Amino acid sequence: MCRITKTIPLICLVMVMLAAAARAQNAMPHFDEKFYQGAGGGPDSSIPLGTHINMQNWQNYRKFMPLGMQLLLEGKAPFKVPNDFEIVIGPTGSYPLPKKYREDTEKYSRQVQLVKLSTGGYTLKGYQAGLPFPDPSGPLAGTELLYNNYYDYQPYTSAINVKALYYDRFLSQTENSTTCVHFKTSHISDPGKPLVIPGFEDIYLTENCEVMAPEQSKYTTVLQVFYDDPARVAENYVFVPSLRRSLRLSAAARCAPFAGGDFTNDDFRNGMNVQPPLFQSRYLGTRKFLAAVFTDDTYLDPKNVWLPTMMPKPSTVKWQLRDMYIFDNRRVPSLANGYCYGDRVIYLDKEQIGPVWLDLYDRDMKFWKFYENFYKITRIPESGEMAFGSGTTAGIYNMVDFQDEHESVTWIKSWFAADVPLEYRDYSRWATPSGLSQIMR
Image 1 (cartoon, rainbow, N blue to C red):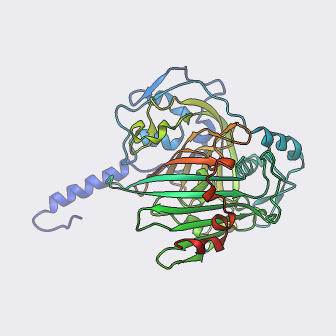
Image 2 (tube, rainbow, N blue to C red):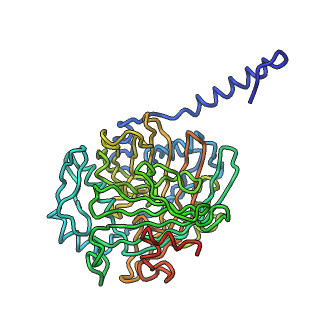
Image 3 (cartoon, rainbow, N blue to C red):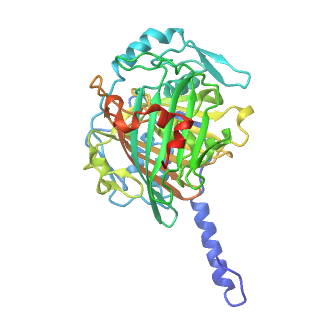
């Protein structure tokens, strides 16, 4: 910090002016609906196979990039993309939703209806399983897309191991590792499983994330319980190791950061851990955008990504152009007071219904965070099919906080259904508040 004195007023003045100039240069844009409606070019827009996109020519292809990626390449964050950064364009792969899930979509989707609530949001009537709205359209297309993502395919149980690195503006680095365990007990679309597990009719999904390292944070745990009624406020619990007990948190805890990183509770499950009735959503268009989808585990080696931006190197993956729905999500006005985000713009993969990119805005509608999801397709053991984007898929997940100049990067390994290690299959331990009392025993 510079203090003005008689001996160094000029130096301090120059420092203040330089700092102000730097802030002005890196000022974040405000939400612009026209950008999203026209960001992806026409329907026939494409990039030839084998094209190399680098720091010298990336602006020629910016219409295929989300806003956050453009700001990153422009140098608006302290985490600079290196000069040898390169994207190589490969063929677009096809990864259909699982057969049982598609069958349930065909069987049940016709009976699903949106019902308006007094708050201004919408709940669902008649939903059983599969995709609620296979052909989103009309003035409520955005709301239909939000529900499609909320009920996207997820196995009846899954687990992930997360290695995370956190950077500040000086590139100082901390790290932790976390295990998250998920149980889906209703609206199930897995072979040999009922639609609803008997005895759990009122619960949709649980998520338990426990810090395994470093020692000073070990055992810190967050448990979230989502009810079958999507309009019922989810339960949030945290186990505090220093107190050796768990606490039930208020609904405002949805905005609380987890384990010292930039991810809030609503940012879990690929950035879309939100309850649809609490939001108003608008469909903005369908465009082609770049995506990286891993087919093997080479992404787990830090040498195969550009740190700290986490962009994968060409030796690890070839990028592809994928069709994506674009829609934004804002808290219903009656419930917006105190919520962290003003808007959450989603780039949703049209085939897998998983969010690939997210642009997050603060309450003044100024660009705040950029969320990148680089998925690894994951095998479903019961059927042998491959899926990604379910909220528990392996891959690289990266959040860049442009305003506070932070970054949280994660490598994730995952297990679906029958592949989940036995130690994570205990529902009482990993999916209930009473299970939190078993920690540290």
